[in-house]
Image 1 (cartoon, rainbow, N blue to C red):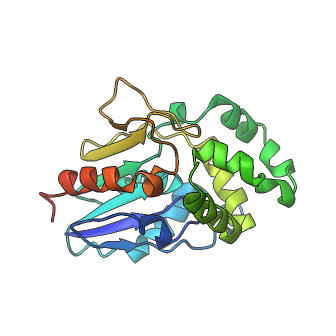
Image 2 (image 1 turned 180 degrees about the vertical axis):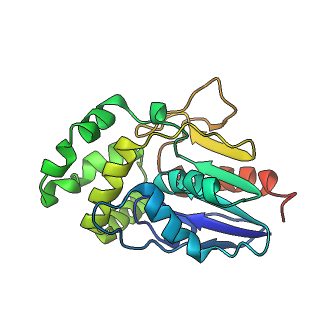
Length: 215
């Protein structure tokens, strides 16, 4: 079973670096969006990196989880794993959706697209210096054009499909994305949006357990 991984907002394979897994993750590489491209059109191009001739699973982090769900519409993964992500627009805070629907994100100048470090640390729930440094580097490496495009896609996302073959893991203290407590969700107590790194040990256990029959 091949396992593909998709990071959040332009983040590369570094997002998986703290995990200790019993299987190998093949990271999908972000591609540049084209002008006015929808998330569905983008996903169709990204899907070319997946070998569908053999069974596969997709793990998506944050925005990568939304992409994973879009991929499940056009491909046939054995399993979808969402970490710190969303399954519908209800999981995206209302203020973000209003900004997107009103087109206000397009009015934000480039220098404000990347908030101050202390704001980022708060919303991602990062407190340890080691992970503050990593998050800072990730943000610095994120392309502004991709960030603007992806932010618009997130705020306007209108998915309602929740695959039956999905494992969803979410932090109880995530300040960026919500989850429906009535749905089947593996909750990491006090986990923030960056728990893929600062709660990697717990996440690794859940991933190894949840995918043990697929590998």
